[in-house]
Length: 500
Image 1 (tube, rainbow, N blue to C red):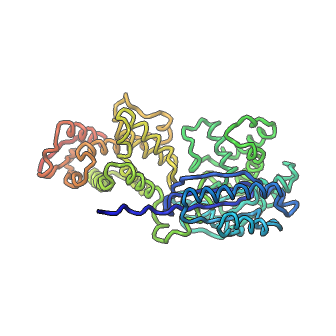
Image 2: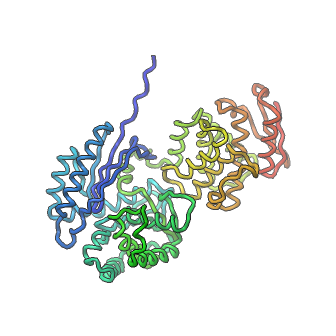
Image 3: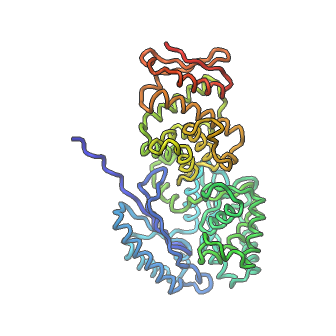
């Protein structure tokens, strides 16, 4: 009798920050991390460090209580390995070593106190792990500090740390916004890491900046509620940051329930820092990243061969393995659409190719859903999926491709207009074409392996032919021919079925 395959052990990161203490448990150490548990406690360890040099007594008590719970949670979840890190508040406070000693006894793990440059590097590696081919400046705003570092693809330069975290600014300025503005202006005026940001992307990392993004999404009535990869033109972000500061000053955000009471007073400092960064660095776009220090820590521990893998493709492969009727069939579909693209001479950028491959891997993940709802359910799953290395536009394209595969291409089954607005018309047409190809492929093969490799594309003038090898000719039917003709029309051809 074959033994069941041993499940890979989970891994957790305990992150002791200046504002929050957090536990994140991941399913396993992998290129595409899957979060299975995530909890934070807003303790405010860094609330008074800048003026008193000490971690506040009540904040220490809250943090140690949270760590006891986190230790128990790791135990009941049978976490395989726990990594623990601490950032600005613990490295700057004179009573930081005493707190760390107590915390280590509670956690049962060594706590790595990150230096400023080390924290900056891990933040950048987090962005590398969660953004496809990043190019710009990473800014990680915590409670105690701001880390800035340049990143290009997987290359990370040296970073800098500044005492501009939201709690630190509140403390240093004695809650005076005018004083805080002078501090920010002085600290950012000649930072080398910002001067290279002109015309590039600024990647905003950190909980308070994510809160800004959440408010912007709500106020903009944006169709997705996904923080990671949310993008705003820098000019719009500057206007928003200025407007938000005025709203906070007028206490007009008090009823926004999705922002915690502890986080809300810090919004104005986060907006102030972002405003000055935009003025100094002059980036083109602001992109918010939920991938940061924790993800960078685990990414760094992967073998080099795994770090070079495409994060979104890895996530699609995982979902394919878990949810599709046949994982191997999806791989055959990738090759089948490769052949289609070559035969019809469809121009395709590397990004378009990777999105097509991901869509192939996800094309059968909705088969367990009721047939009437497969399109909308898979659309929601892909657009809102908890994975990285994909832009919101890319999410929409892949989701639309799979939607059209399930819902068809008739006007009666159109996808939500708000999702279609995320892609340009030409991209939507490409998604329709790909969805039509999926409809042909899955009808022919019933998602079984060995069928698609026995069919071939042939082009003759303006005619596109689908050729069935002799051993598969019994699969030919009028419905197959009808769907193939629909696909051929979408690539500007007439279509016919050929039996070899």
